[in-house]
Image (cartoon, rainbow, N blue to C red; front, side):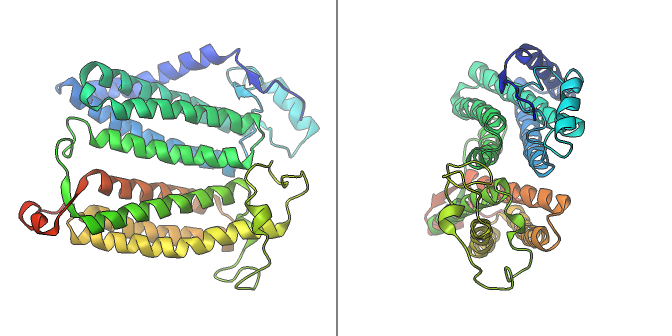
Length: 377
């Protein structure tokens, strides 16, 4: 692949203008659809739509990575200094001629640039929500402001993902940043004036809520391990289940596998990463999933017991989907659909637990019996 300037800011203004124009679509749709409602309610609806679009962007980012399109345009924020792959067609043709099966192709360039277009559009929407909160609802300005700061951090992770040539630690941070942005937008939605739980939260026993918090932390750690598996392309290190390489405990190298600051495919000394390191990465994610699944099932039971029935049913279904897609990734050779569903269900689990924590508060058990009698449907 020919050398290019990894940071080329020439098309940045045109890209920002495009993002503003695209963002006008969902904003206009919400404003027209809810034209008879007041502004805070419209902002609430726009926040819900932004959360949905952020979820879609996380999945599209996963698709970008799984289709090996992360370096489809090897510079940032444009494509060979152009606003789109159309202007960069000559450079793309040259890169393909040099490396016919390399990371650059017209389809990969479009996938990468569409991901950037969507990310910048999401940033404009989050900025819009922050401006509305500053002007009209300063009592909850904290979450929109934090979301705005974090989407800027995410943009930096996205830039470094490209300029550092898919550095595994940065790729993993980029995925985790997308997950945390989902949580921030959800909390922003729950705290807005028109949210049912904006003023008061539902009571939950202190022990049950503590269990949900612990489950949330362990789930986040499992997602981190999953990101590390994906960013190191370690999915196929174990292609059977439950055995790995015909063994319950295959040969592994945890020291090399969890060297965090290294380039893709090599260790910290620049030597090729041994296969045993990839096995250690995969194995850690696989078996950490067992206690996490049990914790989530117990969490679902507690949520159902205390009235959070919709969240509990969703948790049960998503744990099952995680189990099925996780096994499918290994034994079926990492099919694209299973991999995308695995990412989607992980994000869904994190959102469901965050939802339950966001609408509840710890209360003494005796107080709950008199104040909480209806299920949350």
